[in-house]
Length: 290
Image (cartoon, rainbow, N blue to C red):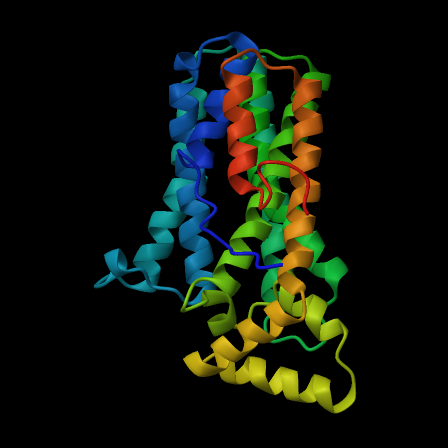
């Protein structure tokens, strides 16, 4: 199959759009959740900056700033401003308390996934189960945002959990699709440059034995510095069917998100907006894979 990986960007950033849609789906109006969307945006940006630091990335807008200054900005965005803003939301104290708890527990799960991701850098033994556990943890970010919106809307516990499950499925699908975009489309491929073991690489590595395995590991090591080697890795994985395999896994999580959306039963037009978000991630938005 000539599967092409397009950017998985949606009409609006998911870290802003998802809480607005979840809240509107439960209450019929997104406007009271605008402040919450600002909070989730700060959380996302703080985590994104910390992720860049951990990977050794330095986007152009940080030129002239030290790692300490960048880390301070990330910590402020992640650990201070969202909590202060949450405390100012117009909601009963007990609801705000559970929102603070939801955020704290979710960040712990995300942090655990990031630690496992860092431990697998350049690993010759990373397993698909380990990578999927990292994907699950990274999907927790969207679960946090959806759960916060549901709590803020005053939903009962069962519906909050359904909203969190919806966010988690969207987050996992989006992360895996993003990994595929980085590997198969982005000419630089930050994951290859940093030795990150994403699912397409681990699936392929698992099938290599003996000298083939040694040679593929050596190729991955060269790909950290050599753009030609990165191209060789990309084509080898594509020819071996790893892209299609991962695209099907993305679709599994998208289908899970669609089923969970029916459990949440949001009002229109939020329901259509959430479906569009899921379709924006899927490699097969018009139906089942061929």
